[in-house]
Length: 221
Image (cartoon, rainbow, N blue to C red; front, side, top):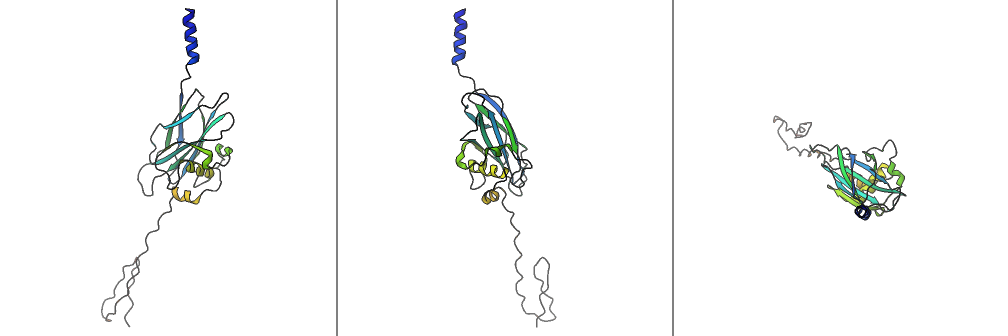
């Protein structure tokens, strides 16, 4: 009996810990805007575990990008998530209210702390988001983790996250990114000019030009 208990104890020490999964719920941004979230795991001891992300729900027309920091804060494992509302102008498709992500770690950890700033592009957040404490982050400071949906034209997952972080922290944002997320509304075409009126006899009815405010052609001399 002692040998059996000893064998069970040794096997429990040898077998690695089962990976642990969590759910991350984010609020989706409004049309032509961006949301930025920080997913932070506390790592009180030992090496940082491997972290993977996956979709756990529909994203509608939103673009979702996830990246890990190449240089992590002490005793933490941090990922940044950017969500871009890509619903085009005039679309009748409904917006998704929530974005649900799944995380999976290589060892058991407590659930992460998730902080978010929504609609950071068109209006600066009232309070400074927690992610701003990481300081400015360029594309090279991020390690790609996941993406889903159609990105803003000209921007990949890491560059989208870098621009979203800058917007959330009230730092300069690339004008090309603003235009890619919120394309300017096209002005309606101007009416064609009225063609010159041909000469006509004085007793002939006036010719009306096809303009929004019709005007009669001038009397022939």
